[in-house]
Amino acid sequence: MKLLQRVPDRPESDFRPFADAEIGQSIPRRFEQQVRAFGDRLAIRWPGGSHTYSSLNETANRLARTLAAARGTSSEPVALLFDHGGDILAAIIAVLKSGKFYVVLDPAYPSDRLNYILEDSGARVMVAGANHVEHARQLCADAIELVDFDAVDRSLPGADLDVDPAPESLAMILYTSGSTGRPKGVMHSHRNVLVDVRNLTNAWCISARDRWLLYTSIGFANSVRTIYSSLLNGASVFPFDTKKHGFRELTAWLLDNEITVVRAVPTFFRTFMANVDANLTFPAVRVLSVGGEPMLQADLEYFNRHFSSRCVLAHALGPTECLTVCWALVPHGTPVAEGKLPIGYPLRDKDVRLLDESRREVADGEVGEIAVTSRYISPGYWRDPERTRESFLPDPGGGDARTYLTGDLGMRDEDGVLVHVGRRDFQVKVRGYRIDVAEVENALRALPGVEDAVVVGREIEPGVQSLVGYVVASPGMPVQGSRLRQRLGEVLPDYMIPSWFVAMDAIPQTPHGKADRLGLPLPARVHRNVDVPFKAPGTAIEFELEAIWSDVLGIEQVGIDDPFLYLGGDSLKAMDIIFRVAERFDVDIPVSMMLGPVTIADMAKVVAAVRSSPAPRG
Image (cartoon, rainbow, N blue to C red; front, side):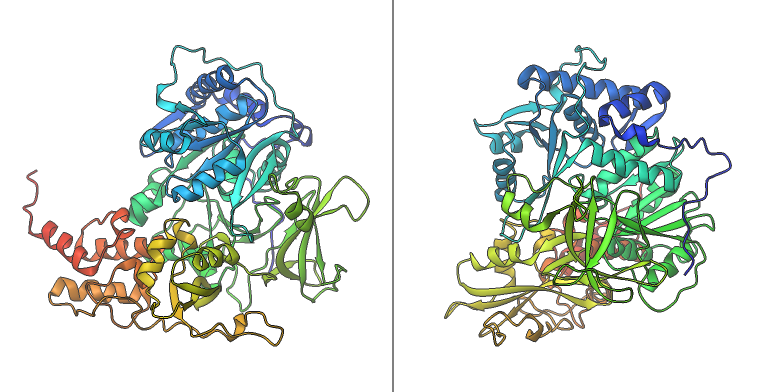
């Protein structure tokens, strides 16, 4: 497969290279340069509003002054509780302008998890956006100072502050799933972010003309790349909440706003593409970046079918601890061949070695653990020196770089091209989220009535990892998936809750007394795995909805009273069903409805009500 060294520049481009010297500054200083150059240009547009660079800067400066007046300008964590949109981006810039670093709290997470992140981060101030002030008050209690974003004094000066964080100072803590049963905080500095932006800018020819889609959670590394590669280059970023608006509105959002850069994880990309018209193309997109999970050959077919001939596919590897490590830049029209799509070549300042169990480099064609050596990777895990020592090693060359052991397995061909093979440990990628199954297992074992539990990632359908929980119940306590999901939902985010539960008399063991994960049976996915009596469809609408649900969920027969989430449903499958229902019945079902205890019977009532209501008069 022929790979490109960089994305071809556009004839009309005003691309300006990101100089190496520019990584030696803070994120706010680079941003303020863009404000001076592009003040009247669009910086952010979201379904609820927009900001030019000037208005975004003034909004951020007022909040930064509020934070500085309350807490000074020393480095400390600031928690952010916002909806997905433009306000949280303004808050992020404000935190950095005040000399502090941020910790994103996802409002959809259970309160236990948010409380843990607050306690672990040590944040003593929180900024909350509209709709979340009361929730923030409950989380803060009397220990954390609360700043209401909408109540910031608009008479405060909008000019830049005289605060300039050092390049090596912290910019953010990104919390990911942890093997100890608790999330772990990955630290990143201003310089690390700027190095990543430099690499993206120069290889992808990013300019002020670009328009970036931002759909992933703000607290994840994928969003970090999008936010800063756009706003530190004078480009525009377009936040869009797919869980709220769904695939049909996303299609219009991409086309109407002429989005040029799209970053996605393969499962999201695959599900979205399966729901767009076969003849639809996205002509403005010039870079499609896909990474975080294995990419299938069918995904390459989607790329060739739905994107223009000038679009380039960037298939990347970028653990949260390293940001972007390597990518394969694949030209449009590349033939679909057997085998895995490569992850390409390491980027500047990110040296990649493949190590065996003795930490010696393996030969070309052999599989080894991907180890990344660089001066520009995370300094480690927040307040967790032991785990930091386990994953981050000294520079093998004796310099000031450090080596991160990714846990990912790879191999290198004779041309030096890297291919991702899988994981060395028990971490799993589900819909782009990196999950340490130990955290899910600990949560399961803590539930009343659970004697033992093991969680594994299984490829139930090609290219899609799902979590499966194997549960040994206490005597007289049946394994009820509905009860387990409900209790886990009180302590874990939805993407960490297993899609399937399998009752076991005992967890099989290896001769060494460890759980035999390879000996666990596959769940009976083609059958219902719910705790409610089966009830067949009785109306024409229910029959058609049952066919849609059955096809999306991969279950032969779905009862009309079976809750969607108990059938292995998740947000992506919800959007898939919603898109098909809209195409068949011309009825828009909100995604929020699917993430509750919705059944086919519930959905049929909504469809019937809409179809029976009189059409509005023109």
